[in-house]
Image (cartoon, rainbow, N blue to C red; front, side, top):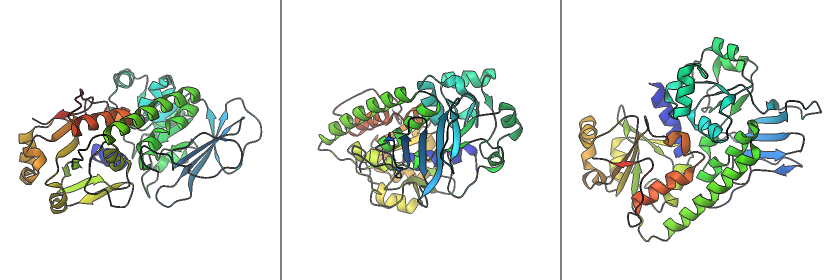
Length: 369
């Protein structure tokens, strides 16, 4: 199984209260000023001298990890039983372009000293820094170079944990591991609110709050726009993987919520779970063959002929025969770097595709030819 395939599963799970509504924090922390309001998996509470960050376990419930974000020069008393992270970070390692995109937007890219799977970082700024060696590639995130990590001496590592999987030898280094489970949030704005945590890790809390406020306002306005349309097209997503298995968003994933926010009907909207569903071709055909639109993210260019050559059964999907297939080439598109903290950009593409009466130039997708 390729690293990109594993990465794609993570994105599907993540892609995939209401999206336009409110939420509540992941846990209760006495005292202080609560900074998060939409997220179900992250609670940030400002106690003045430091910030407490609770990350909820999305698989079992309860607290996955509690962090204390304390200034580097603060020597006062800190809560016990939490991982202490000295901020702002100066020598961080980032496992995904999802987070480097937000860090760059916050103006803190100089604090990224290492990445995992460097070939999958698509932003020109990150690519240039990786090529020049300013940012070092520690290798595959599932088995990174411990020697390189020791040499980098990071003050924190940002990674996305999988259920029942450890970070391996990295856990023995004594470096704070920021468990970024934002991809398991159930709404787009809940995930986007994790930029508040990133901002405080890199000394850009006010800037992060401003970005989030703008994003939330834009997203809600787009929701309102989509709701005004009487059309509710049926939409399916993804491509079959080797062996004919389709990994599609579960009904409680934030991708399913985003499709609803865009005014679409999703055949698996009533399924449980915030990650992905694994379906065979027969199940996909049963509910998806008459879909009006088919949204695909593919690493590399894709043509109709190549699609049919890879799997002839795909010709039975109406969206393919009627020009309703839209593809994002993730090898060149900034989609993965942008959409987690800018869901309004992806939502705008979806609305333009599903409701063509309001035409707009697409940012990420192109109609399959």
